[in-house]
Image (cartoon, rainbow, N blue to C red; front, side):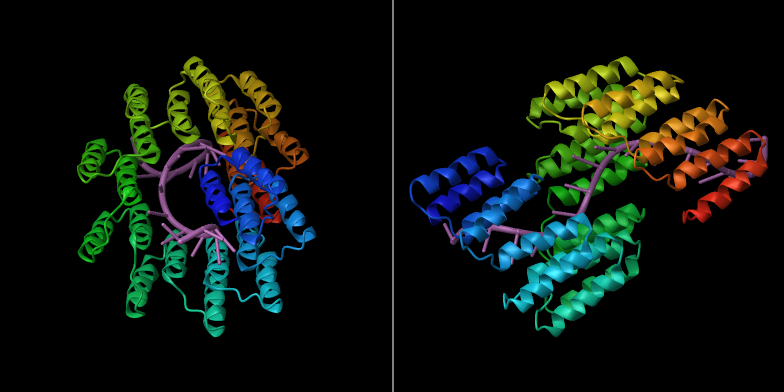
Length: 420
RNA sequence: UUGACGAUGAAUCCAAUG
């Protein structure tokens, strides 16, 4: 059973779920009865691939075979709920564990903390930390890193910095993730000096920067448009034995594109293949966005086809970039056609996609007509957001129809959308 | 040394003076 599971785990980690499943079924035929670990391993594999149906079926199967879910199995459920943003249910599951005397350890609590942090609910996150301490569970480096990321994403860098000091005085060693989180926080705030200070600190504490740490810094310079510095950092990371990965390249691609150097980006993609780094959907989409922004729509469309040929399925963002490209070219009909095409590919347009259409129709001076798109959005199950309204308000303002603009502001407020 | 948690990359609107 253990041997099988080691194999199973390997297959799951490699995303070879079909093989894993085959192995699982094979075990049954050999008369090896799967234990809770086998089931959990496979369930986790399905969860990570987003195949929740299969995961749930497996859960039912294990229960029906009298295999009791344990702390790990429950935790996976908790994590799934947290990632879906269903925090009440997630909390309930943890309580359920307690009631069933499956003593939840630090991990399910970390999941809850992470869930709340990702929603920006820092008070609730801290409440969970208090609760875990109350239950006699010590926060670990992950707990702190999760909280740290939460504060960073809220832009509360003073609190973030304090938290790192706190964990050190609590006797916990910040690791590469902790530091990378903090470095990212400062980078996103544009505080490079601070970011560099903490890179120095991590090194002096014997924590080696890894690819993620460098990617964070590289991305900062790419966003700033300082491609020289970005490329220099890449050279530095290579000299340290860190291989640039698809994320490194994506940042560079975006940097070049935003500098208007789409040609360089195209060359870089070839360089990726050469280095054996396979571009993924994001990498391709980044280049695609560059092409669209330059109005090179023929190239853009053929790039989308290339993606599909490579088995990389364009997502909403990918398609939306092309939709926006057509919109900005004034080819609204083509944009609409593409929206139908994406639907037929099983990709639903979202608010952003619609906002693009709204924007281009406003630019034509037909704000009234653009406004009517809201109905279409609603019937597609989408709610207009602050950008939708900003676009329309701006449209009316430019047409000199201030009354209508003001009406719209009132309308958005009445819908509970805060003007920014 | 069989399973669960944390960090990095891509899309839409608007803004003063000129």
